[in-house]
Image (tube, rainbow, N blue to C red; front, top):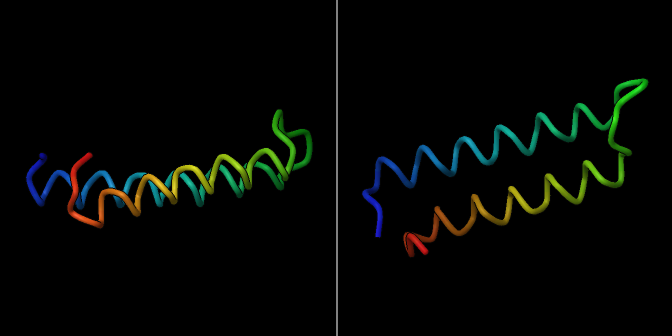
Length: 57
């Protein structure tokens, strides 16, 4: 179990990273494809959801 402040921080950071990796996937010459970026972003959004549920797993 983590404290509420830590869970909120982790959630915010995973959401921020998800947005950033999606943006990177759209840039010309990006080392990741748009599809790869969307999959990675989805994984980070799922992690963010876990932190918002309060489970702290």
